[in-house]
Length: 366
Image 1 (cartoon, rainbow, N blue to C red):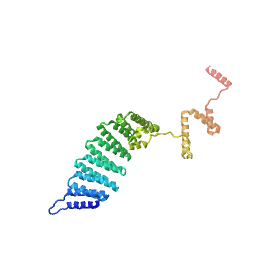
Image 2: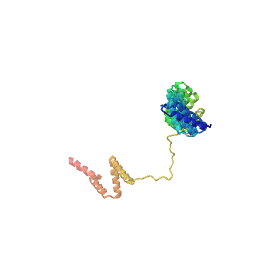
Image 3: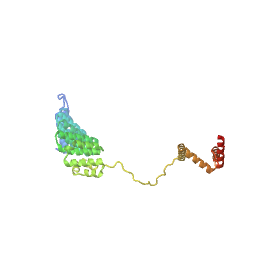
Image 4: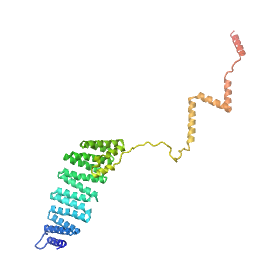
């Protein structure tokens, strides 16, 4: 008998177990689940993966009806391998979440986190967003079971995927959570490496202040070469020195970090001068300067105002200038002004007239 025929025989027995009759009031889900599982194994050997998947789904449903949570989860976990063979990973995340819930319901959360991790690794290359959600749930399950070491491992994968997707804000939070998990187990070397990763992520966010705060908070866990390199890096960004920053990012321990962080360091934007002095020179083909059509009027008005102010401050000089101008132009007003001035001003007396006036004066006194 071939495996396909054997599988069909198991299917007939499973369907028979689910039927009811006058003497059989309830379907036998336990027997049906075992028969479906046996049929799935036969189809798998015969490489009929579609029939194998259908049988595993039916087996998982029958195990659930008989409240056998562990075996139901195990059947769903086997479907993940079949989906990989069928190259239909779009259903993997849903199947993994269902299996993890059944494992938790049975009381085996570690097995649930493991199936989530398995599905996430399958999806990490093709669908990193779904892989991210699976790793996050696995980390939460591990933390709920007071297993910070295992939770830190899952959270590390979460942070790396976020860096890969350029989700730098979420990546910074994930790295901080991972640091907290390593603090619970007092693993200082891992905290030192994560401090370097956190500084790089903060610089990728463009937040130099947050990067300096991260170094001050966690830098004491770093080794001496790491501290020296981070100080050089942060000083270079503070001084906007691109060459020094490039030298710090090319340090050996940064190059040998996890792949995603090493790529992040290579693609990190270098500091640049924010303000540059423009070069002195005349721009070619520049347009002529704009001159207002009212410029002449404004200039004439300003000249008149200046002359009025000058006259108010120096009246004598203004009169002298006016006389000179009138004389030079033979202004009739100037002539009348001169005549009136000559009439009012006394004429000088001759010496003879002066003597006669003195004699008259003396005679008058007598």
